[in-house]
Image (cartoon, rainbow, N blue to C red):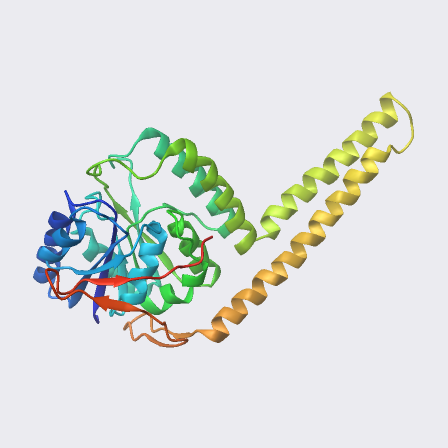
Length: 333
């Protein structure tokens, strides 16, 4: 296996980031796998950057807070390895599980750490994840064990192919999972136990919960629009027929205008779904033409030909030698 890049997005994690990086070094040095640890400081004003560097990580800094997804995209752009391992910097993920994810990479495009019921997660999060996993399984046509897990290993060229799709927020795992499956790459799930995070979560249920549902609908229409439009079409046509039968037998044996409108609307929804499905397919064809991937799923011989990535980095030579500050603005969702 070639070089492995372990990317950790961090935002005000000075209390735990040093311990997490040190644990990663301990695990990876014992494994004998060539690796690098990349910490992306997403505009923290505390000691997150210095703590990560002191523990032996290569640190990249955002000039200001841009979001978890933006930090992940920066880490993927700066990764030197053939495989990128994405994990949280708050102590939830066990570095020993990195080796379990990498064990499946030779035969898969992406391996996801799926949180089990033994994980120390809040009840409302478990309920939300169940809803997301069920909906995503319907969209993909296969069982999704953990849609929102931030612990995953993915081939670097594959991750870079979908960078333009990833939002700057916490919903990047949802997007990259559906994109990888939609593109026909193998995805594996490895059961993991997530610990309770150190510090307070950056996710706010009341504000972010409805936003995640909207994002799920947007992603569904982006990757498999017919599975959204078809049920709406059938329900609308069914209501039109039901209203016609009800009025015919109980009110007036005439075709009501409401039934006509609902039936026509249902047909239009179906046609919109067909057109959207063709547009989605064309978008994937163009993305693969512009970023050709050659993957050997047995020997991990990954080569990529694609557009170069422009980066503006300014080295800081005093205090933290390996730290880079990048001023960039990624497009949002």
